[in-house]
View 1 (cartoon, chains in turn purple, red):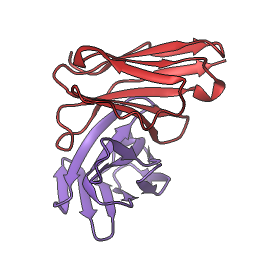
View 2 (spheres, each protein chain N blue to C red):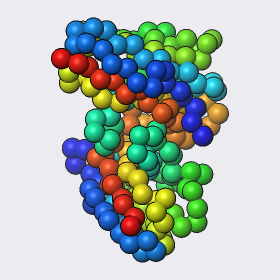
View 3 (tube, each protein chain N blue to C red):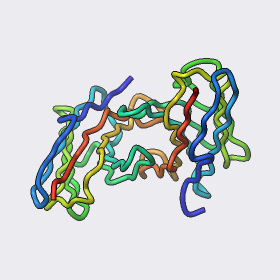
View 4 (tube, each protein chain N blue to C red):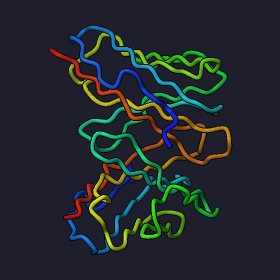
Length: 112
Length: 114
Protein backbone atom coordinates (compact mmCIF):
# COMPACT_ATOMS: atom_id res chain seq x y z
CA UNK A 1 0.00 0.00 0.00
CA UNK A 2 1.13 3.55 -0.68
CA UNK A 3 1.98 5.61 2.38
CA UNK A 4 3.12 8.92 0.95
CA UNK A 5 0.71 10.97 -1.07
CA UNK A 6 2.07 13.83 -3.11
CA UNK A 7 0.15 16.96 -3.87
CA UNK A 8 -0.39 18.23 -6.49
CA UNK A 9 -0.34 15.33 -8.93
CA UNK A 10 0.86 17.69 -11.64
CA UNK A 11 2.40 21.15 -11.58
CA UNK A 12 3.31 23.43 -14.48
CA UNK A 13 5.24 26.68 -13.91
CA UNK A 14 7.43 29.14 -15.79
CA UNK A 15 11.18 28.88 -15.72
CA UNK A 16 12.61 30.94 -12.86
CA UNK A 17 9.60 30.49 -10.61
CA UNK A 18 9.65 28.42 -7.44
CA UNK A 19 7.97 25.00 -7.31
CA UNK A 20 6.48 23.54 -4.15
CA UNK A 21 5.37 19.95 -3.78
CA UNK A 22 3.80 18.41 -0.70
CA UNK A 23 3.78 14.92 0.74
CA UNK A 24 1.58 13.45 3.45
CA UNK A 25 2.08 10.12 5.17
CA UNK A 26 0.32 8.00 7.76
CA UNK A 27 2.68 6.23 10.15
CA UNK A 28 5.61 7.18 12.37
CA UNK A 29 8.78 7.38 10.35
CA UNK A 30 12.53 7.09 10.73
CA UNK A 31 13.19 9.39 7.80
CA UNK A 32 11.60 10.80 4.66
CA UNK A 33 13.32 11.00 1.30
CA UNK A 34 12.68 12.80 -1.97
CA UNK A 35 13.57 11.37 -5.37
CA UNK A 36 13.45 12.65 -8.95
CA UNK A 37 12.63 10.51 -11.97
CA UNK A 38 13.22 11.46 -15.57
CA UNK A 39 11.59 9.62 -18.47
CA UNK A 40 10.07 6.85 -16.35
CA UNK A 41 13.37 5.16 -15.57
CA UNK A 42 15.75 5.14 -12.62
CA UNK A 43 15.15 7.43 -9.67
CA UNK A 44 17.75 9.83 -8.35
CA UNK A 45 18.00 10.45 -4.63
CA UNK A 46 17.69 14.16 -3.83
CA UNK A 47 17.58 14.56 -0.09
CA UNK A 48 16.94 12.63 3.14
CA UNK A 49 15.48 14.28 6.22
CA UNK A 50 15.38 12.48 9.54
CA UNK A 51 12.41 12.49 11.86
CA UNK A 52 14.20 14.77 14.35
CA UNK A 53 14.99 17.37 11.67
CA UNK A 54 12.62 20.12 10.58
CA UNK A 55 14.35 21.60 7.57
CA UNK A 56 17.15 20.69 5.21
CA UNK A 57 18.77 22.41 2.24
CA UNK A 58 20.69 21.14 -0.74
CA UNK A 59 21.54 23.66 -3.45
CA UNK A 60 18.23 24.98 -4.82
CA UNK A 61 16.26 22.39 -2.85
CA UNK A 62 14.63 23.00 0.50
CA UNK A 63 12.79 20.25 2.35
CA UNK A 64 10.68 20.68 5.46
CA UNK A 65 9.24 18.01 7.71
CA UNK A 66 6.37 18.39 10.17
CA UNK A 67 5.99 15.13 12.06
CA UNK A 68 3.00 16.43 14.02
CA UNK A 69 1.10 16.88 10.76
CA UNK A 70 2.81 13.92 9.09
CA UNK A 71 3.73 16.05 6.11
CA UNK A 72 6.73 17.24 4.15
CA UNK A 73 7.31 19.77 1.42
CA UNK A 74 9.92 20.07 -1.31
CA UNK A 75 10.70 23.54 -2.62
CA UNK A 76 12.74 24.02 -5.78
CA UNK A 77 13.84 27.62 -6.16
CA UNK A 78 14.63 29.41 -9.42
CA UNK A 79 13.37 26.48 -11.49
CA UNK A 80 15.05 25.45 -14.74
CA UNK A 81 13.83 23.48 -17.73
CA UNK A 82 16.08 20.62 -16.59
CA UNK A 83 14.01 20.32 -13.39
CA UNK A 84 11.15 18.91 -15.47
CA UNK A 85 10.61 15.44 -14.01
CA UNK A 86 8.45 13.44 -11.61
CA UNK A 87 9.18 13.88 -7.93
CA UNK A 88 8.45 11.21 -5.33
CA UNK A 89 8.50 11.23 -1.58
CA UNK A 90 9.31 8.00 0.23
CA UNK A 91 9.04 7.11 3.89
CA UNK A 92 11.19 4.79 5.95
CA UNK A 93 8.74 3.26 8.38
CA UNK A 94 9.58 3.06 12.10
CA UNK A 95 7.39 -0.01 12.47
CA UNK A 96 10.15 -2.35 11.40
CA UNK A 97 9.33 -2.45 7.71
CA UNK A 98 12.58 -2.80 5.86
CA UNK A 99 11.79 -0.77 2.78
CA UNK A 100 10.88 2.68 1.55
CA UNK A 101 7.24 3.25 0.69
CA UNK A 102 6.79 5.61 -2.26
CA UNK A 103 3.95 7.92 -3.12
CA UNK A 104 2.41 8.35 -6.56
CA UNK A 105 4.58 11.33 -7.42
CA UNK A 106 4.16 14.89 -8.68
CA UNK A 107 4.75 15.53 -12.36
CA UNK A 108 6.58 18.89 -12.61
CA UNK A 109 6.82 20.72 -15.93
CA UNK A 110 8.97 23.82 -16.27
CA UNK A 111 8.00 25.95 -19.25
CA UNK A 112 10.76 28.01 -20.91
CA UNK B 1 30.81 -0.73 -10.15
CA UNK B 2 30.06 2.95 -10.16
CA UNK B 3 26.31 2.49 -10.18
CA UNK B 4 23.53 -0.07 -10.03
CA UNK B 5 23.43 -2.04 -13.28
CA UNK B 6 20.32 -3.76 -14.58
CA UNK B 7 19.93 -6.04 -17.55
CA UNK B 8 18.33 -6.30 -19.95
CA UNK B 9 17.15 -2.71 -20.33
CA UNK B 10 14.18 -3.88 -22.36
CA UNK B 11 12.53 -7.27 -22.62
CA UNK B 12 9.59 -8.32 -24.76
CA UNK B 13 8.23 -11.76 -24.02
CA UNK B 14 5.24 -13.86 -24.94
CA UNK B 15 2.55 -14.54 -22.39
CA UNK B 16 3.32 -17.74 -20.51
CA UNK B 17 7.09 -17.56 -20.90
CA UNK B 18 9.51 -17.20 -17.98
CA UNK B 19 11.83 -14.18 -17.69
CA UNK B 20 14.89 -13.38 -15.60
CA UNK B 21 15.88 -9.86 -14.71
CA UNK B 22 19.32 -9.13 -13.35
CA UNK B 23 20.58 -6.51 -10.91
CA UNK B 24 24.21 -5.79 -10.07
CA UNK B 25 24.30 -3.45 -7.07
CA UNK B 26 27.03 -1.07 -6.01
CA UNK B 27 29.94 -2.95 -4.49
CA UNK B 28 29.72 -2.96 -0.71
CA UNK B 29 26.02 -2.11 -0.55
CA UNK B 30 24.46 -4.69 1.73
CA UNK B 31 20.83 -3.76 1.08
CA UNK B 32 19.14 -4.52 -2.25
CA UNK B 33 15.56 -3.81 -3.24
CA UNK B 34 13.30 -4.64 -6.16
CA UNK B 35 10.38 -2.39 -7.09
CA UNK B 36 8.12 -2.26 -10.09
CA UNK B 37 6.42 0.70 -11.65
CA UNK B 38 3.47 0.59 -14.01
CA UNK B 39 3.02 3.41 -16.50
CA UNK B 40 2.39 6.71 -14.75
CA UNK B 41 2.23 5.09 -11.33
CA UNK B 42 4.29 5.09 -8.16
CA UNK B 43 6.70 2.40 -7.12
CA UNK B 44 5.44 -0.92 -5.78
CA UNK B 45 7.76 -2.74 -3.42
CA UNK B 46 8.52 -6.34 -4.33
CA UNK B 47 11.38 -7.75 -2.24
CA UNK B 48 14.26 -6.65 0.01
CA UNK B 49 17.59 -8.33 0.76
CA UNK B 50 19.83 -7.30 3.67
CA UNK B 51 23.14 -9.08 4.06
CA UNK B 52 22.69 -12.72 5.02
CA UNK B 53 19.27 -12.18 6.60
CA UNK B 54 16.15 -13.83 5.23
CA UNK B 55 14.70 -11.59 2.51
CA UNK B 56 11.49 -9.64 2.99
CA UNK B 57 9.25 -11.11 0.28
CA UNK B 58 6.08 -9.42 1.46
CA UNK B 59 5.63 -7.43 -1.75
CA UNK B 60 5.79 -10.26 -4.25
CA UNK B 61 2.37 -10.25 -5.96
CA UNK B 62 2.11 -13.99 -6.57
CA UNK B 63 4.04 -17.25 -6.35
CA UNK B 64 5.05 -16.73 -9.98
CA UNK B 65 7.56 -14.17 -8.72
CA UNK B 66 10.79 -15.14 -6.99
CA UNK B 67 14.17 -13.57 -6.40
CA UNK B 68 17.54 -14.59 -5.17
CA UNK B 69 20.74 -12.84 -4.29
CA UNK B 70 23.93 -14.80 -4.71
CA UNK B 71 26.99 -14.11 -2.62
CA UNK B 72 25.45 -10.99 -1.21
CA UNK B 73 25.87 -9.24 -4.55
CA UNK B 74 24.06 -9.90 -7.83
CA UNK B 75 20.32 -10.47 -7.67
CA UNK B 76 17.97 -12.14 -10.13
CA UNK B 77 14.22 -11.57 -10.24
CA UNK B 78 12.37 -14.40 -11.98
CA UNK B 79 8.82 -14.21 -13.24
CA UNK B 80 7.32 -17.51 -14.31
CA UNK B 81 4.42 -17.93 -16.74
CA UNK B 82 4.31 -14.21 -17.45
CA UNK B 83 0.96 -12.45 -17.77
CA UNK B 84 0.14 -9.18 -19.49
CA UNK B 85 -0.38 -7.47 -16.14
CA UNK B 86 3.29 -8.15 -15.37
CA UNK B 87 4.22 -5.51 -17.97
CA UNK B 88 6.00 -2.73 -16.10
CA UNK B 89 9.41 -1.23 -15.43
CA UNK B 90 11.27 -3.29 -12.84
CA UNK B 91 13.66 -1.20 -10.77
CA UNK B 92 16.48 -2.38 -8.58
CA UNK B 93 18.11 -0.24 -5.89
CA UNK B 94 20.89 -0.69 -3.38
CA UNK B 95 21.84 1.10 -0.21
CA UNK B 96 24.91 1.19 1.98
CA UNK B 97 23.16 1.42 5.31
CA UNK B 98 19.40 1.44 5.69
CA UNK B 99 18.04 4.52 7.32
CA UNK B 100 21.08 6.72 6.87
CA UNK B 101 21.54 6.97 3.13
CA UNK B 102 19.23 7.13 0.18
CA UNK B 103 18.86 4.39 -2.35
CA UNK B 104 20.81 4.27 -5.61
CA UNK B 105 18.56 3.04 -8.40
CA UNK B 106 19.41 1.28 -11.62
CA UNK B 107 17.88 2.38 -14.91
CA UNK B 108 15.36 -0.43 -14.79
CA UNK B 109 14.17 -3.19 -17.08
CA UNK B 110 11.09 -2.42 -19.16
CA UNK B 111 9.17 -5.68 -19.44
CA UNK B 112 6.46 -6.01 -22.05
CA UNK B 113 4.37 -9.16 -22.13
CA UNK B 114 2.54 -9.66 -25.43
